Length: 160
Image (cartoon, rainbow, N blue to C red; front, top):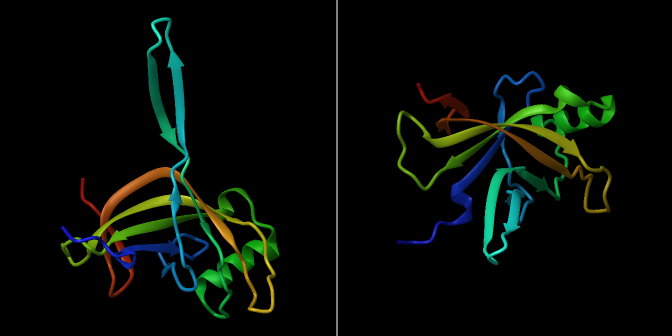
């Protein structure tokens, strides 16, 4: 079986402040994008010297750094709005769609999972290479399966 190239795991973020599903692909200027799972692990040792491990959940995050601002793009406008308006709480809510481009197209799109997330702008400014707005995506765990249509950048939930 052949190794999967990184470019075939695509990440799209809803850049519309009202959550209308206006998706832009993450990746330009990024050499790495890794979702950290941060498992909640409980380990216990009994009097016999045996260990038990219990994983009760995950707190997923992903850092987008660097992010070079590009005037007019939806993601730049959304991040700049967060900075300018000091947005908090549900104002930061969005969705991220993870698309498996290595799998077979079905129902007009590629298999995908959409997950609710919050955007945390971690700073802004940068050096002479350009205006940077690094941010972290905090996933909530609220997910749904479906397909992502690349042509019109639309997520279609799987019917129950």
